[in-house]
Image (cartoon, rainbow, N blue to C red; front, side):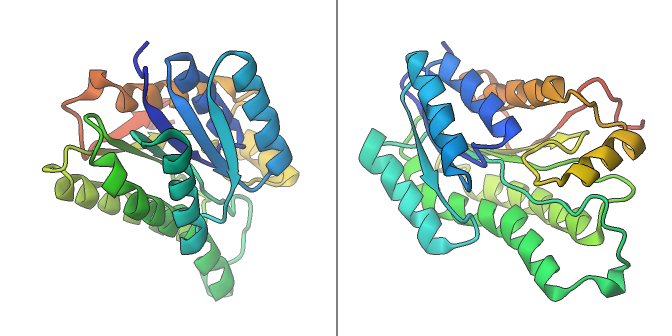
Length: 248
């Protein structure tokens, strides 16, 4: 097992990719703190993991709310005594929204930035003191691949995420915490998509109708970056193509 006796905190753990991550990390020995907005889905996942012998718990959280984030981190420490892995998987998408840049409301801008960027910052901020106590602390940021048709705020927030990943990685070298980013080619990283948006993604962006293979690829990349196998990797952007070349 690659993650025996380690504790992983996964945001958007109740979403498709989050569930796949949780299952794979648990299979390799990690205890899990999952957080998201769907209590029923979260509880169901915890029960499934526990039936397989894993230790897990679920916490409701607004990733853009500092008090919520701090409470989740404290809950993880109170429950498991440590945090070794942080997976910032929460994001939000306007895929299919064809509003012009000038029509974008400030509320939409702030909402996407707060989930995709501020959430990752807050969790990193509150978890870092505990990650630095681990011998193998690892932060893994996950964002959808920005493609033609994505809204300007999405592409902008993902560019910021690259910069933040690399800046935090540089600042945590002495603390021994590695920080990397997974850059999936298909938009399945936990983004909230309405049914019409999913249909559009199938048609325009060739997102697989059964995207379990993409989710599995992202989960495998997460396992790699969370484990000792990637001990020399930090500040990196790892592209996961999931059978679709980057230039497709």
